[in-house]
Image 1 (spheres, chains in turn blue, brown):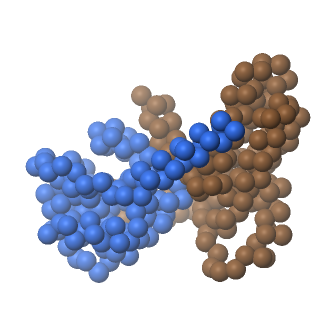
Image 2: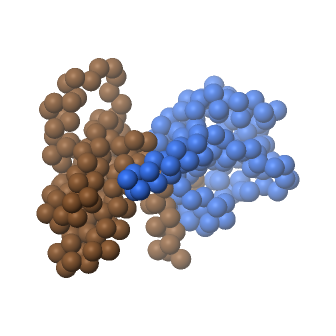
Length: 130
Length: 152
């Protein structure tokens, strides 16, 4: 009973913590360079998604972000294999996949989605970046 | 690796097996029941059954475990709606983690290390329950951490 109770409590907490995009405090420091990213930042925003092989929600997130950014020429989506970029993972404190950083045009992290975000959350996060 | 790398475009994926995403979750519910019985009865025999199921899932994939076969034959035909699919590797990774826990529990059970047995079964039950109730993705949470720790 204790095991079941603790498990369910953890599950509820976990679910709550993963179902939102956290806004970052305004800083001016880019978290990544375009060289590290392997391409230029979007002129409005860039989604930097970190994925791993043993992760089902990563596929769903990739499909969603690819679809959302398809019609938006000023927003870029980059999917990075976490395992082969451990230096970035450590520097950016990424502990689980999928984690998606939302960068503004200067590469400053303005939001972060841990776990698979929902479509309206992604659109709301984009709307906040002018 | 499966995903597009940062500095290259589309990397082709060699033969990803897609399975019904509801199957592993159903399997985890059955696994939870077996593990709960093992925990309450403190029974190495019941853990041996769970171990055998995890062994099949870890080697061949979750769709070949007895729960997986039962799901395919009896549960799936009764489900309506679009079939959500997923890559078979994440749930297979979870089966391998389950296997590791049940190996410890089995050894502890046979050797009569009561506390070790209880802790191993309880952790395994917790993981299986999270999977069944919340669709928890074990691979998402611990795989990256394990890679980070190993390469330190």
